[in-house]
Image (tube, rainbow, N blue to C red; front, side, top):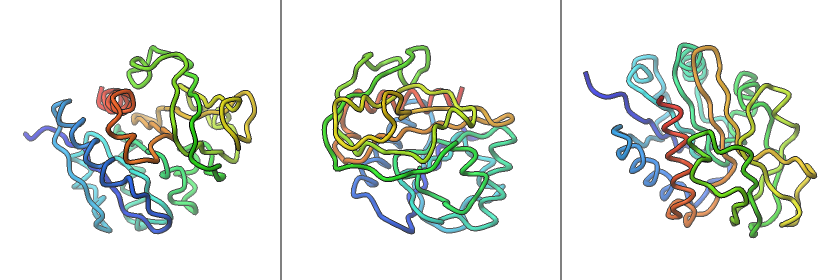
Amino acid sequence: MPTADVLICTRTAGYRHDSIPAGAAALAELARELGRAAETTEDPGVLTPERLGRCAVVVLLSTTGNVLTPEERTALEAYLRGGGSLLAVHAAANAEPDWPFYGELLGTRFDGHPEIQPGRVLVDTHDHPSTAPLPDRWSWTDEWYNFTSDPRAAGVRILARADESTYRGGTHGDDHPLVWCREIDRGRFFFTALGHTSEAYLDPAFRAHLSGALAWLTA
């Protein structure tokens, strides 16, 4: 039987990030390094139960707006609850705004960002594959996303936070969640707010972060 693959979804119905091609290429390469095949798609309706049955991980890479059909939403929820895995990257925080299940899964919603600028990521734990390669205080340049609420209330595990003292425009104060994960029934979900620029996907530390996320999602 073929090895379950990584399906990278890049369709957008709102703002489209210039970094999507670089991100898709990087994620495909990282998947192959983990022994997985990868496919990138923007086809509407691709998330069928049959196609999801061949997936180790579904990736929403900076998807924006409502890009999933009602049938895809139903299939994706069933896939996750049944043991599948979902990786949401950067602007995927702004995807599917009127799908309640996705909002509950994410644990919050996107609430804007300041201009791209240098700042610092505070890594809360190194006992997760996505943060194990990172320093405690990681200097980084990105769009520092703000959120409508603290996702902890939804039961997620926070892995890294933004240090608002190192950049302008944060709205969460001393505790600004940035990277988190959770389990949903038998499935797994991982979100990183990082990844706005094309250059990010060439950075060894960020690639290690994404690779660790994929490793956890396929464990």
